[in-house]
Image (cartoon, rainbow, N blue to C red):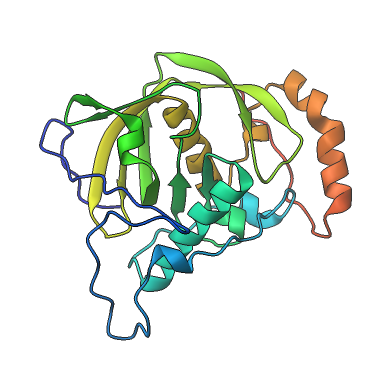
Amino acid sequence: RMGTRNVTDTPSPVTPVKCMNQTSTRTPETPPANNSAPLTPQTARVLQITKYPDTILQTPTSPVTVITTDLRALGFDMLATLRASGLVGIAAPQVGVNADLMVVDVARSNRASRLFLGGRDVPVESVMPLILFNTEISPHEKIRDLGFEGCGSVPGVRVQIERPAATRVTAMNHNGETLQFVCAGLLARVIQHEWDHLRGVLFMDRMSPETLSSVQPTLDQLRKSQSVTAAPLSVTPLG
């Protein structure tokens, strides 16, 4: 969806972004002519998280053609929501928006992550949080990892999911700059989980039939508590 540079080249910097009441370290932007007020992290709002079985969670998103001021603001809102909810990642469908946008922040987690920029191993916390548009991933399928996952849209469910242990990522940041990096550990797991959301795939789709059966009572209760009609749930075999 976008031009990329090889990871062996000097990468575009991953610009740290802060939200809520923290100071932004990015260079102030010149707001578009139709913007009545500059976008600042202090404007971020905590949004309601969409719950399963809302059908937007199983609807593939559309790519973002222009990163508007409203979409940047949405990214900050999603970061505020992520932190208020104690999550490490949120995709736009989880706040009711059909857009190829995810936010990630694993800096506060005690689970290990690694990130490589231009072939260099850099501290993950130095580039957190991430606001990513039009994300594409290339998982390293040969090495897989089994790890626990939960989902803000599916409260009460936390199970082990098998995924590739590392992935190459290409995306645009909130300034429209192309980013390319390789990540492993929790960061790779989170990005793959959120990328699934952007394709209308839920982590239940990654569960084995046995695991899905074990959480079915919780899913049934969520269905009863939500006043929407769910799309049929399918299971994608692992491996």
